[in-house]
Length: 259
Image 1 (cartoon, helix red, strand yellow):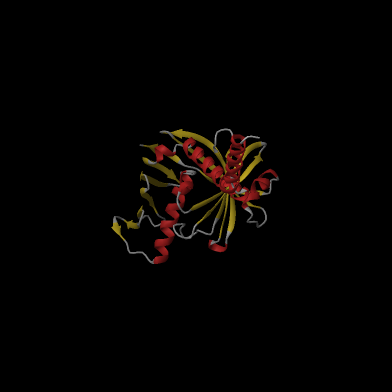
Image 2: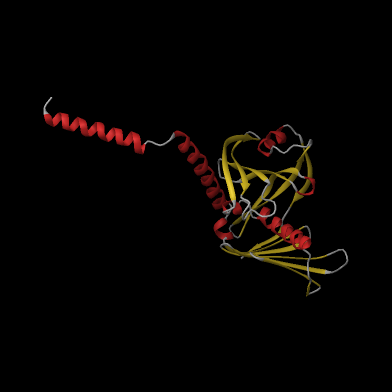
C-alpha cells in the first residue's frame, strides 16, 4: 500500500471516529425528541384543521345554556364577554381580558370577593377553552406527550396526554387531560380529563354535530363520567367501548357567528 492510500485510509477512519463520537445521536434523547415532535405535529395539524388561523384574529358569538358569549381575539390578546339574566331577574354582564375580570349587575360594576372573582372568571374561561379546542393546546403552559395510536370505535386515533406547568397553568394546573385525534383528518373526536376541585372526578367527552362556521370548526359533545370512580384518563376510550360510562349532559353551542 503506497503512502497516498495510507493517508486516504487515515482520513476515512478519522472522519468515522469523529462522526461516531460527536454526531451519532443518543438513542434515548432521539426517542424523547420523537415523542415531543410527534405531539407538536399532531397539535399543529389539528389546530389548522379546526380553523385556528381564523380564531387567531376573530370575533365569535354563541349561546350556551341560555347565556350569550362573545370572544374577541388578536393573537394572544383576548376579551371574553358573557351576559344573561339570573334567577332574581338581574342582568349579569361579565367581561374578562388577559389580566382582568369585571362583573356588572344591572349595568353597575360590583365589587367581588377573591372567591367570587376566581369562580366567575374560571367558569367563563372554561366555557371558552372547551368551545375552541384544540386551539389552546399550543399555550406555553401546556405540556404534551405523544402516546401513540389507539383504535377508538374501530377507528385509529393519535392519543396525546396533556398536563400544565404551575406558572401560567391557572388554578387547575394539576388537572390531566387526554385527547384523541383522528389519524385521517386530525379532528378532535374524544377528550377526557380529571380534576381536583369540589372533591375531584373525571369526565369523558365524545364529539358530534361537527359544523364549520366562518372558517372555524365547531362541534358539540356528549359529556360522560365513569360508572366507577376512576382517574386514569388515558384509558377512558376503553370505558366507552365497554359501555362503562354514564351520560351526564350535552355540551351544545347555538347561534354561532364568526367575524
